[in-house]
Length: 201
Figure 1 (tube, rainbow, N blue to C red):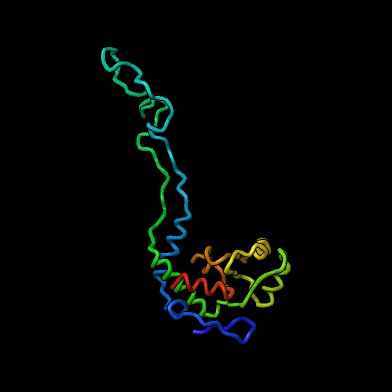
Figure 2: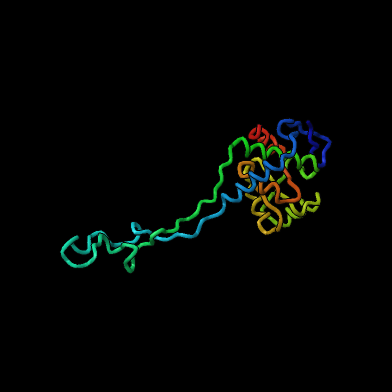
């Protein structure tokens, strides 16, 4: 299939196996949920008997003192001892196969192209890290809420977009399903499309 390049009469030929697949909502939901869960951090933690300091020596001999036997001053029964069933940081990550992840990415990209939310430009860059320069370019294509995807890391573009709300810049390697779905439009350069196509095939 062919994708029209923005503001030109040229077209970019892309693979149907990437840009022509059906929208798979259950798969996308599963992959997005797993991606967001992977960013969560378990913050609850306590120290068990083996984690608290001290307690290397047996406080007194086993028999003959008249006191209860004790093996460590850091027993959970003692003041300053460890927790009996210590809480550990929870791992929220979910396993997602590579095939599922790429399938979800293909489905999202194909749907963006079908709905007209994918803009492909031959090149998109700013000469200097100036916010105004990028704003002028985005206003020209009526893109106020947009994800800009480039083939390589573009420092000028990244610095120009830092202070603009609802505008995000990334390269193909940093692309993820949440970023694709977060914005109203996705602007990709032609080389980014080809790199994405090679990755998802």
